[in-house]
Length: 136
Image 1 (cartoon, rainbow, N blue to C red):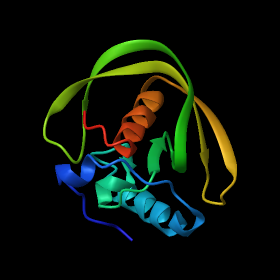
Image 2: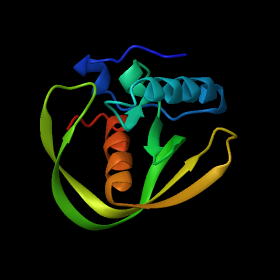
Image 3: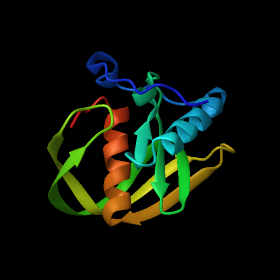
Image 4: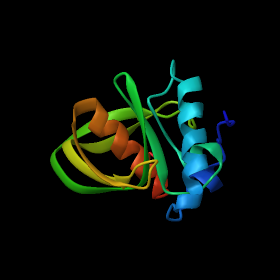
C-alpha cells in the first residue's frame, strides 16, 4: 500500500525500534511507496511513512531492496556531500563513505550482506541515518 510521506520532524528524529517478522508487511508498503515516488526518490526509511521501525528500502539500479534492521559493518573512504530528502526541503551537508558493507534481514527474514559503492552506498547510509533519528 502506498503511504503518505511524513514531514513531521518529531517523528523523523525518533530512533527506530528493531524490526521483527511482523513488520514484513510494512517493508512491502515501503517498497510500494518508494516505487510511487521513483521520479523524486531513490531510498526511504520507514519513519518517512510515519513508522519508527528499523526498515529501509533503496533502489539499486533496476531493483529495489527492502532491508530490515540494516547495519553498517564496514565503511571506507569518507567524503563530504550535499543530500536532499523527500521528507525535507532543500539540501544539507553530510559525511558519507565511498564503500560500505551492510548486513540486514530480507523479506524472507534471511540474513544478507551487501557490499556497495558510490551513490548506492550513499543512499543506504542516508536511510540508516533516518532509522537512527538523524536528520541531515
